[in-house]
Amino acid sequence: MTANLAVVVNDELILEYDRAKALPAHQQQHLQKLDGKFDQGIELQGHFIAAPDIEQRAKYMALSLMEGIIYQEDARAAVSLAWLATRLPELQQVKAIVDEQGTHFDLIFDRAYQPHQVVHFDGLDN
Image 1 (spheres, helix red, strand yellow):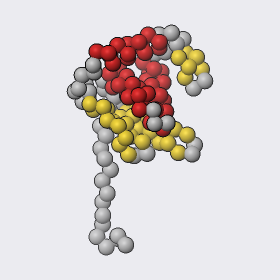
Image 2 (cartoon, rainbow, N blue to C red; image 1 turned 120 degrees about the vertical axis):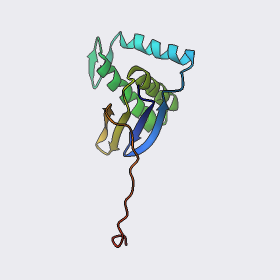
Image 3 (tube, rainbow, N blue to C red; image 1 turned 90 degrees about the horizontal axis):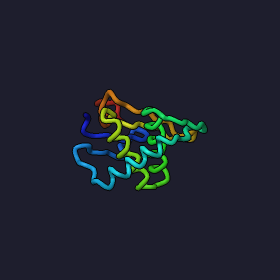
């Protein structure tokens, strides 16, 4: 299991979930209730899915996470992030690009977040 789950929007680290910290029991129960709701089906990108698999559930929660961030709904973002972190223990990053064309995201399992490093070349900086 990966310790941290990073949320990166437009190459900026926005949120980070530390899996080493246990969720309180009431929050775990809330996530279990969400799983029960998912068992009844979800609407994803305009289509109803009666029995969503883990990938479809993850996409739904990643969209909810992005909406929580964009609309500054902290509780929604926190629940979505906790669900992703606990249900997908190998997930390392939710990486999104938000621009005038909309929001596009990837769930990244194979590499941890690494901040960009600025490299300065002598004589080339003006």
